[in-house]
Length: 232
Image 1: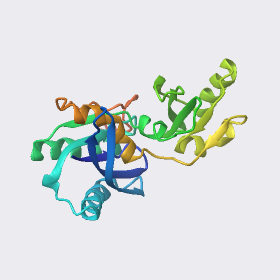
Image 2: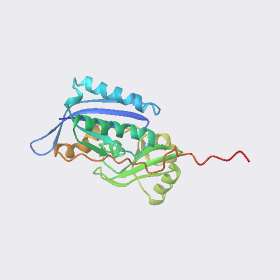
Image 3: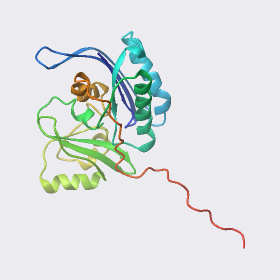
């Protein structure tokens, strides 16, 4: 069963195509897969279609062969995030297949096999970061939320938290996380991880879901206020 994954919540445009199957013991079997990722925060709309075509071509698959979609719903900036969500909804409707939403921070944390607690930190612009905390078993136990990296680092010190700090935001603001193990191995949501997060719902034939974006704050663009009167 081919599952297409899309994420535009970060500066990267991430696309994956995975052949997913259920094993006899109820587990999930990973078949052939293809991934495509390009970092360009200003070209999500242009690059997403290119990425979809690339993974389909690599597996010699057609759009009609896609049986489900997994889409990152953020948190992320308004403009970039909605590109992936709208594309996922449109494709699911056109192909008449289910679509499932996944927290984009989970798609960074879930791809870290090393045991131990970890904090996924993503750049939120405006000198802020999105973050979420994960336990040893990959379960998200706090977040997602948004704050300044200084405030997050202060909270870690005050609570005595110890663990790995991973993701693009961790690398960008590494100076604030002194004393912690900062990792940049996986900086952006991994599309294969999105498929992993949605795998049970896909294989169980769960109903399609509304994709509710995790904005966490107001968009940068707002309606203009009433114009000032310049005549007497």
